[in-house]
Image 1 (cartoon, one colour):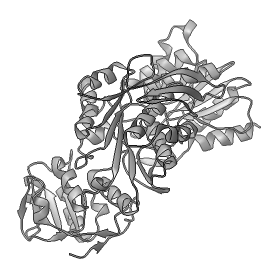
Image 2: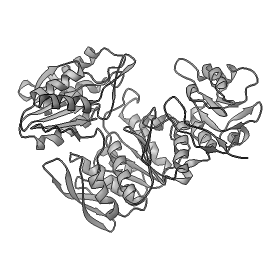
Image 3: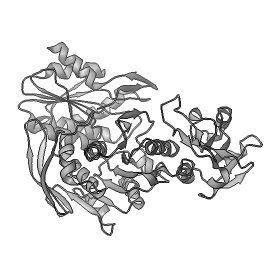
Image 4: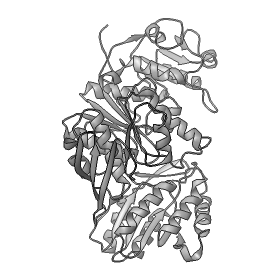
Length: 508
């Protein structure tokens, strides 16, 4: 059958491949335990979002918490969907005569069906997945730098950006839903991408967004408290992360924490990475921290010994850089080619310096969980001659248990803590700040930073700038690369880097 044309959608710029070979519903039924009802039509795309439907699509109607996706089938069919993938409850709600692929549970088959619609795109790519609590974004950007240095054409899917070579596209999640993810991979393959570095969140793993793909290499950074609003406990969180490694034959695991040691212990022959003096396949020693926060270190690996480094401040980034080198080596890139690029790379909103000639160091970082805040402050303390100032908030509608922990850590590790708003979302901002303040004020007064509360984030950043003097360090934490602040369902333009730069300029 001849290819069918498709185009970029209007809603959020998720791309579709320019040419798709139509797939019969019966051929899709062969890759998953689904039953075909009605006419055996051709489909040229797939989506679970009615506002992303294109003519010729298969619409996936999933059950939701309050509304079944079948309620949106009418809109999807009106937009050009030719068939629906759904469960028995969804089928019962559809108009008569609509071609249906029926399955007991939609989400477990959505990845496999989506991959088949787009011609199993991951089979034509080297897909390199990174999971863990912290370091995913940094590691994938460092991997991308190494891929480019080796002459590979790279794709990147993650929190900060989704990139097809040098072209940025928009995505709704760190790891998109399975149909959009498979579409992205198909576009990458079509545009000549050879390797894809991608973050793989626990949500994506648990919700089947990466089903339908095998990873050439899968990597683990670390695990610490996060997303306990979604997972039952740390064991459930760990199990979700660990499930990535069922999808690869080449695991690479950082064993600097107990979770990494435990994960590696479940594998037959993992590649391990260590920066704390333990035994591993790859290890780093002779770490030298430069005055600007960058690091250099000696890399040891299979047949490898050379000096590399990381330009991003923080000793913990040694593990991210070494992990990137180990993954790149696993995919066939010589370390001596990758190392200079990895050492020079930077990441938007990750320990990003903002310099307007002020007599103190100003940094924006995405740290929005206890371990990340602790790591950022500990990384900046050796660079600070005088006061260490942090402007910090916590997001609403997320894990509430971490708020007092973040307040406590910041009050203990900094000299001045400005408690402010992050993305309050649907919650009362004052209640979020109160939880942080409770944790901060639990620190004994002799060990506690000066603590002030400034709800308005722009005013809080201004307060941090006003308090900073020569030899100080100012960390604006929590939002990093984000360009909006969500308040009661409305996203207002807000970029910590832009606001901080404006305040620094006004100060001068």
